[in-house]
Amino acid sequence: MVFNLVESAQQRWRAVNAPHLVALVRADALFERGQLVERPTPVAA
Image (cartoon, rainbow, N blue to C red; front, side, top):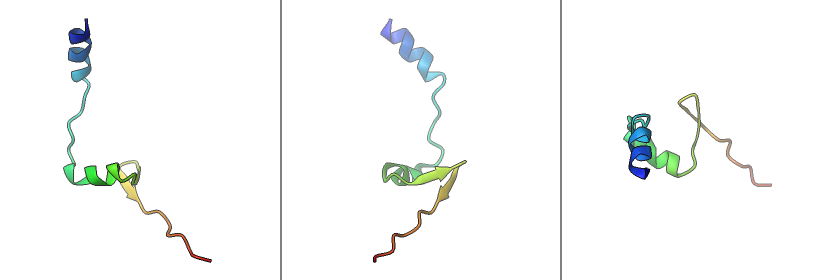
């Protein structure tokens, strides 16, 4: 049964088509609609 579930899930998986962005995703970068969103830099008081 598990084999059938994994096979059906694989049909909907997408390949990584931007491997250079994987490091950004792992570093919690923020993306909106596929574009990298720059976070404002905190200002020290």
